[in-house]
Length: 351
Image (cartoon, rainbow, N blue to C red; front, top):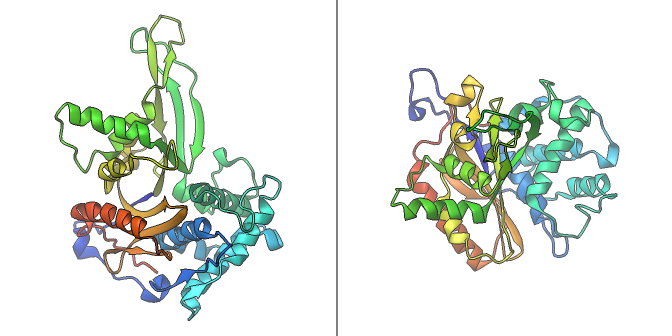
């Protein structure tokens, strides 16, 4: 699931500053082909969400130079698909070039191989990492400062973890790292919701980040660095202001009875100060991000949903014919609709 910052003109409300985007570039009727046996729904969903992210689409289009790897060039393959989305008159387009590039790139790891189903979240994350490598040709993804690297400039969350004892004041050395997807256990998330409801507290739509933070800290206790006998929780500190934040839900089993509970916990808005224990960037402290995309999985099939900025509606951007799954996704979207369909607009044209 992806959250982005929404922009508005100084002194103006979101509705007043809204500018309609280009229908040509967003092409609602265009899908990606997934023939029987291809099992490409995981890839197609990741690509569709990236395409619908206005910030990413504009930034990728402006890039030209890169370290090309020929048939294994994920950068070239993705730009080719985006170009077809914008220019082709066909309603269904092949994603073979990107599927082949992924298979060739990860053949040694036996990941994303032709004809085999794989994980959409990991595909999404690996595409971002490969774009970084095609732009800066540096495997050190934690330390990239290149202004042209859209992976880090738009998606990267620069964090450090540290243990601080409130009893004696001792602290561990900070551990810096970068992540593009922030993973959260659905079991831990639902436990936090149950704990809150058990205290008769109202579940507000703006506290989703706090729930995610509490879920991430569940059971993560360590001994005090000075051995004072206290058990302390880890603190995660955000040091930058990402424009796009991606949350990945980790399920304990393929068949889970927590689906409805997770849907009910979803919030359309995400405050970075709630998501992490501390935020050091001043812009990040003031940022409120809005949900704009989802990749969902049920009945062995991936499907993607995105918020279309021109029509102010959610759209299903993959082929789907599974009744249970359609019902599940419609139910989740109807819950979200109550909160933000009237306010998710941008002053930047979606082109």
